Image (cartoon, rainbow, N blue to C red; front, side, top):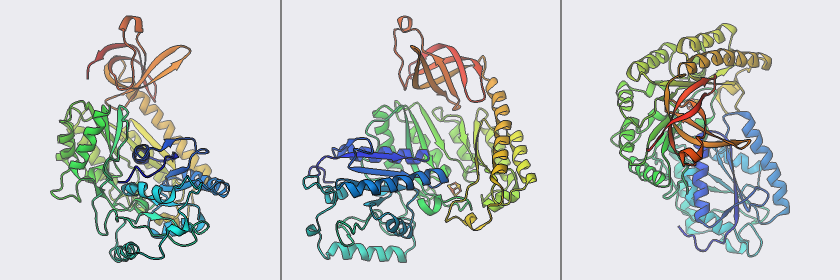
Length: 512
Ligand code: SF4
């Protein structure tokens, strides 16, 4: 990696979407910091990275708005580069379409390909001349690398693979021709293993750090754009994850959340097929790591053996985020979720048998194509039956490019809102009842933040079951300690709402 020849500039990373995107942005930030770039506001930045999400309409619209603003900014500034990553970029066709609509995008990139950043910046960032793009004189008409690249690209197209080439966009206004830069192709055509570039991890880990372990998704839920944009499942090799996890802990992480769209698919594509529990067993050996979380779960990948082994690992926290999306079998078929209601319920019951302390959260979509009142009622029935701790509910909105986009979006918006509120109402009651069962118990809490209001400091954290807990900071003159994120305390729960648990005093400060 060449770093010394790149002059310093300022960067801004804009991130929307899930934890996976936040984790990816942290890694891009590390690379830019290591290159000597400085973080700045979007207005001041020389490189703006938009890390996008296509799962819902609103974040995608925001990205389009920002791209329009950045086009205007680029018309007035020669020292601005724009990079796009995340769910909005998918295959070469998507890139071509976006490139035509937004010719001012300089780089399309997936996080696995972030090791092209140094080269990209070296080629495009020339602050001495005040130009954000490489001078045309620097570009050879054709080169051996270009031929190599195109040959490899042809091979890639001939060998279907969801992974795209890192793409330096055409910048016809400044460069005047399509640019293909000499570069290693990462990953190679047909390569199904997801390697993050070396050293790409957060420069500073917060007490709660994310560790993406499996990228992409092999499911084809009819409403979902993720598989088209993130490609097929690719697990990161175990040794790479262990190195990164150790490094995150050395930098201050006490809790790691293992991320994947269907996280139990970890290892299915690796030699020797290690599973999620094998990975957790190895991670548990890391000194200084206190908690391991994981998300998002998929019922058909959760074997009994996996659940049993996870349940017996003391560092693995008792919480499962397992989206069901609907409580009706016909809806599940239309959504192509890959399981029946009975199979889902059987998995939950089995998990509760094997891991009695487990708490559950789920995702629900209301108003999906053709959802009848009776089908919606089955979802409410399921909430009553399972009694999830947390439900994330969303009204269906069409995602262009998905199978369901070809179907009629026939549930009126007002009805979708009514169903959404009905789910919220049922869930608020259930969550309150479940949370009240914590009153009087002593819970281990990892402090995540300190809220300060009217001179009073309040500790905010989570117990092992992922419940949000608030507690006033003990009088520092008595405790002789100023608390900070990453501290562990034991608190007695005094009150509960549907959304959090509250304590009045810290019972014990823990040395974890
Ligand atoms: S499991 Fe379904 S909803 Fe989840 S990312 Fe994959 S395709 Fe999308």
